Length: 468
Ligand code: NAD
Image (cartoon, rainbow, N blue to C red; front, side):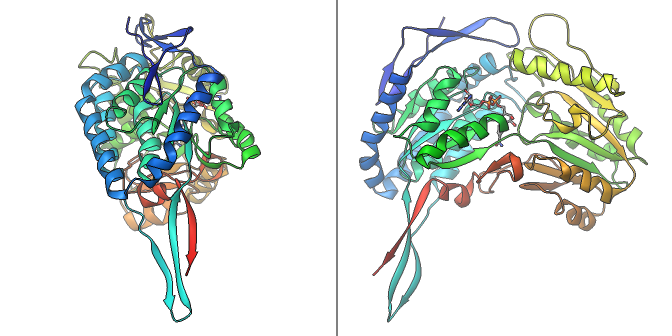
């Protein structure tokens, strides 16, 4: 079995204790993770602090060049890391799976490398010159989830190092192996100490959030943990970017064409078997086309191959871990008990692995947990409505505010309604699209701050005003 190592100060570091990492499709052990201690974290932070002055002082063009070199390295190792992601996380190699994730990593890394934050001149007249400079924050702690382990790591660490910070990353204990490998290959081109990785249990994340040697935390994960991070970061007044959970509403208007939108709705909800922050998690459909939309979605679900991600034909994989599997199954049982009608799926698939079928539950409404909470799995509640203003209000009553979408033929009307949703991103006739030059982030309980593009890069800097 392959053993993976942490990287601290450019060196490979192992530990005396390890944890086996399982393939959620088969239950097989796919590798073992070092169980890093508080002392390992302290060593990683010290390495990042030692490397910071040199990296921050490196000429901007050189940093840009090294970030492109990192992107190229990720490209060279894409197939290798895609296989690790599929083995530890479960998503298929193909379709919107691990090869797609690695393609995103390369694209995002190059695009982030190309970003610039030039000095801005605010005033230049006889009274003097005032400039706005962007300076790196210092040591950035990155804490990542298990759903898109490498893509989210790239989203965190590339802007951090592009802006001149050094980094300590801690991956999710469910999917640490691909990130440990990512950091190893990044260290083939970066100076020692710029990019460090520690792995271990959740308490390492808590220790990072309160660590005196870390200046900023970028965290992607659940709202509950995000609140804890914010609490523990208060003692050191750390800068924070929090990308948290979503419960995105999709609203289908009466003038939508069910056949034309079905595939967009399907993948908007079920990318990565629904384990995606910005996936559609509740669907409101006007009563006049409710049944036609349901039929089109069930038809697609029945055709979509779900299976072991390492099989080239699989389009959907298992749930990634037992915790998530139990949560999804529990939400469906609760919805059934509240009068929900399952029109497809609705019970775990027998056999190895955490497989749960694509499931649609109708005859539910707000107040049922499956509608109110983030399910993060292959289950979509479909809510019938008659009045669009009422349903926009319902969608907005939810504390989440990550994304939302409106589906219809009258684009001007759909756009006007989309802008009334309380969400960081709204889409018309699509759901979940993101790209590296477009800021992304949540409002309300879905987070603080944005990632991507110049707006995202700025989050890894402090403003310094220079009066001359
Ligand atoms: P999680 O909150 O359970 O864990 C996330 C990370 O936090 C892991 O690395 C974990 O080890 C660490 N952690 C656990 N306890 C901690 C503590 N007390 N202090 C600091 N760190 C701690 O989330 P998850 O289950 O891994 O991920 C799923 C969640 O992530 C979903 O809610 C999803 O919507 C959200 N998510 C959001 C985005 C976004 O961009 N908004 C993207 C992906 C996932």
